[in-house]
Length: 141
Image (cartoon, one colour):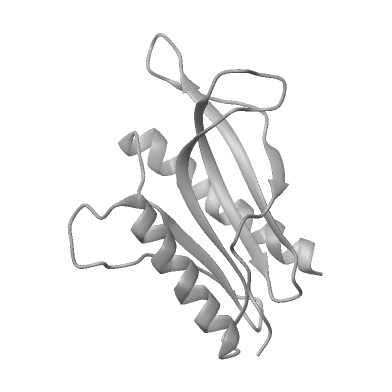
């Protein structure tokens, strides 16, 4: 069940990140969460500044989700951010959509979708790949 929840959150986050890239060329980190009854919602943070630093926004969202999990409000969450990554089999960093996902069961993963722009400015999405999650964890209440 945890994987189904994380897949649903990933699809929601990836869809919105792709939309933002196509329409605005960028996006600030945002979150997605799944309530205990399975409803998915997008989440934005407000750090009181028009252009918050990405690292601060990621920390804010992850901390907020951890508290929501402890209080029993959510069962899964994800933070989506734009970053550089070296895809498997390559040696150079490239832009990527990164979605950090965590479930109260303990399952956690990061999914990366490399992307680039072609000579006409259109986005080209690469092959997604996953890695073990870093420090983003949720715990049951």
